[in-house]
Image: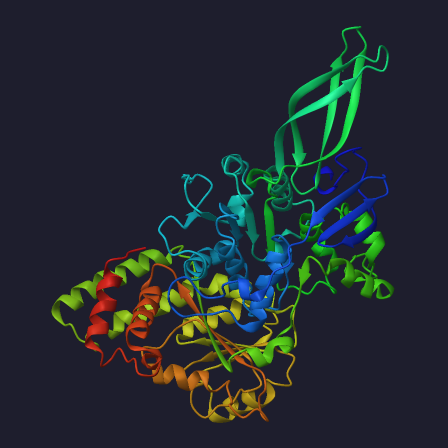
Length: 577
């Protein structure tokens, strides 16, 4: 796999690190081939960075996120942020970009397709609100216009050769990759494409003038030309192949020369974001480590035999126990990992997250549009809540169904941490049953709804905590009264309620302000389907919150708020799938 093997740019031998030292703010690497390279370290003061959102919302990074932003900048935008899920890796990456915006744009952001719109919205919150700030690249045949500060693309689209050809024409200064563990397979097209792209972005070219001496007649003359070099290496190496006037052919290496510190020669940085623990799945980290530190992790085989041990299935998953501390020290300059336990005191007790996803429309788009036709006719006759609630409820159910593929993928990724419990709030039986079916043969979950009697509900409430089942699919109305799931820290809500009191009651089934009962924060994540009534309802509430204040969350009720009902229906009717 030549693309994943890094070679010395001077002698072209495999790059094997021999020693590493720090001289002032310069890190020096010595390799077994006998060559040295250096890397300047920037020392940053927290007071010199800005941790406030750009959209005037007043949002600020939490204390541990400030440390993450500082870590990224000091790494020269060449690192892995491996914080546990839901600790806010996205704001850290975007705030780091915002603090060096002129130096690090254009920027390319690579995400999973389902998260593309959520990232676009987060970008406008933390990095840049201007219209030319970020451009979403949708599909491999999409036109990619020049002139934007950042471009965002799905992993699958990015790996297409035709897209790569166009992207390589843009002089990117930074690459941000979300869910970086998705590039774990060294032989996949996705991984190969990313490695090749990073190298392309870091290939520089400059003029040179070298004095050449003929070894036969000792005549000296100057050679001029252009030389390619790797921007990540602190030296550029010049090879001269020429012919002397005496007829002798000259092959001469000019040794290492410092590159001119120009913006054009600045290495293209790469920030890799992943919540997967490295110590138990270490082989999956070879590609990310190779990308941010090719001088230390230059080949997969060497990585395996140096640091990892095999299990009885032949998998290289764990770091050798005898090498654990040395491994942590080796990756420390480029890898930052915080667990929830490390930052609990800095997290809010009730943490609300709103995730915008691209819905899986399939055949549901036609059904959705037919319901819009009926809603339009009803609205023309009767502009009241009860005159249109049937169609509004059906639309909400269809949105829930369109979010199921994303939800199943999400829950599968959560199974890596088997100790964590997840509740999935739903409203419609069809959404509940289809999700339950898609969870697999053993389901790994309970389901609770109004169809269960009081005894069954109580049994599930008391037994889920100690059960080996990780998930609970729960109807928000049935689970909103008289239930206590404080042992569950993570709640995923697929179908919102039209009444904030009902949502609040449901949320508080998982929350307890008494620290002697519950010390962990409660994470409530609302999943929103882009371009549907789902998104328009969210935008309406967010707009009111900005105008009125946080109290709107505690008082919205579509049944009695005539203006909001009108706003929601008119916008919904104007957007068909």
